[in-house]
Image (cartoon, rainbow over all chains, first blue to last red; front, side, top):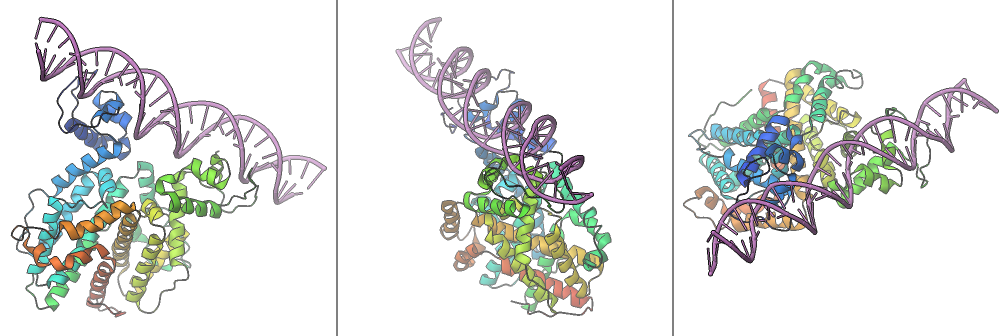
Length: 241
Length: 241
DNA sequence: ACATTCGGTCAACCCTGTTGACGTAAGGAG
DNA sequence: CTCCTTACGTCAACAGGGTTGACCGAATGT
């Protein structure tokens, strides 16, 4: 191959099956492939087959599989935060941010799982950080507290979302086995050795559903409590459970 | 292969190079391998080479690569929780659990990145779950709430720890570049476009340190508040900030 | 001492990502 | 309109991955 991907494509040559390749089409097809047949369906060979071209043709557009994944991830980030504006209620606004980030990640689990902990210091992220800290400032927190608390909040949201995405990106048999574990393994335990688990036995199957919302609500409760304890203006967004 | 892994090993037969295989030795070697050469260094063939045995001998102990990964994860949990017994103060005990899990993950950053989000359904994990739910039951929560809240708590702890571990597992140049970016990129921003970030500018360099403790404290505050709202027996562990 | 079965070894299969060589068609230059 | 260059689609091949079935020697319970 040797030829590096040019910044702008000049010549187009139809593939054997007549398709005109492009970076856009490849990313698009990759996302479709993942969406339809699961994350494990993304491989160079399969992607080539889906595009109707030789697998190695992709190396004319991405010098690496990782390069392709990053291209996909880059697009996801842009989509996630698009068109969001915070409202008057700072608690509700933070909740919305959390849900948006999570939705963006879950929409494309595998790419998200790969790029989750890579912090892109780009414009969309910077705007989100500014927005979140701004919300905590209007909540009445001191600048230092606002910065610290925002970090705790967004880190929790991001790592939770990444965890969910990682789970969803698991090969299907393993994913389903993990889910079944709560129903099977955790059901047949010796009551005397595991008294607490026995007491909550009926609740365990629900454990597979994750805890994103609950964790976010707990955090928002704590933040709201601290804010009102500071005698600050309270966005009293519906917290509680 | 066909023979499933027996619950207890009875016979030992030395490998061609004289090593006596065991589940313990295999997991141990796998952790060393990952620790030295990264998560991608874990393959059946390489592990066999490191152990001085035929790669397929491992299938006598783990019926699957995934099975091995789960065993590794469970061992990390076991190491982290070893010798821990919950005290009277349920809040303090949960805090200790959180710190222990985090320490265990950070001790094996690269392995943690591989196994963090899995349900190992093995002994060490089951014991930890039983312990945690037990603490919330003594706090006075109903079984269903105890199960849900424990999940939210431990998921947050695990995903935070995994995020920290993933960051720590990054190649040094990338890791340091990410840290520098906080100081560089976020310092030279236009005040009118990013007013909140400008207001907390002095606090930003500290953002690189992470937020594990703060997030845990926020969660514990919220849990304690809910518990006392339920009129429950309160372990009033020192919460607040 | 014998029969059983555990478990280490070997060969093989099919999947990956990736590379280098090859040739063809596209596009600019004259 | 022709020619030359180069983009890029194709092909064959390599290295490495997980997993399986057959083989059979050795360790163990009887």
